[in-house]
Length: 251
Length: 85
Image (cartoon, rainbow over all chains, first blue to last red; front, side):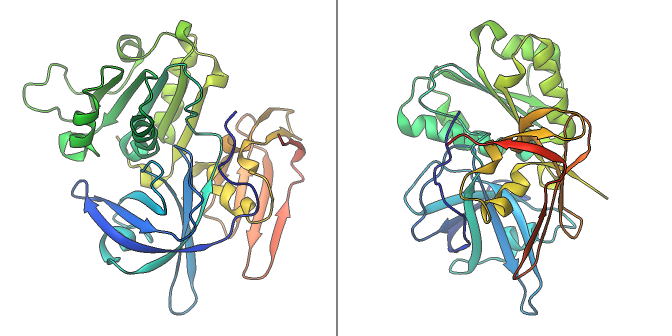
């Protein structure tokens, strides 16, 4: 079992927005510099706290998208139409602005580079974000651990990190397979559809290889995929899940 | 509308109180005896506090309410926590 990157009680830290980049029409990656950031494991989160001038305060949990990079931490935030925090993070916040963050959090849904069994990553919508941290960490370490990323996404315009995934998949040990649920790219060989048992059989790893499995997305997606994997013989203890709330979107 | 999240949602708030990462601790449910990691507890965070329910029987395991100066933690639904040190 992976250990948390830090022991000791968590406290709020102040992070400064140093840059951002738009990933899709509704998703933006925001890069924070957080002094004395202790580092993080691939798959961990931070809590973000916003406080209004009148003292009203609210918190949300976001997966870290980046591999460890000194005191920089990247989050990818998908804007929700009626969201309280996501529109602020993805539209209003400007370079130099400060927010409060607490983390890194969570030692369960993390990829341990010391374990060399293959890893099967299954993401729905913005559930791909913590999986991308795993893919980036693997690349950063020059790891030869076989990875397969199965990415369920509504249509080509909603794909997060597409160009970067195209570059990274030149590594033959990293396979990336999309499942477009509503609309496929022109000339795509498969019709739109959700990930089902046949898809997992074709593109996943066989249970006999004892892969580490990480499934992240909206609750319904996560439960469906986890059930399919267990039915296909994967040990439930090796199938780790993480559910997104509304920020996961529907894929 | 209540949205089911997972134990990571409450891990940060518990991390303010505990000196260890509670998300990887193993709980035993007082309702049904199910054991699992706190990361996989079903969490509802849209109440005034946070409520964590057992993924097997949906009994309430933990309730946490936080104000500026005080935290109130009810763990009466948990028989034990097993924490790796």
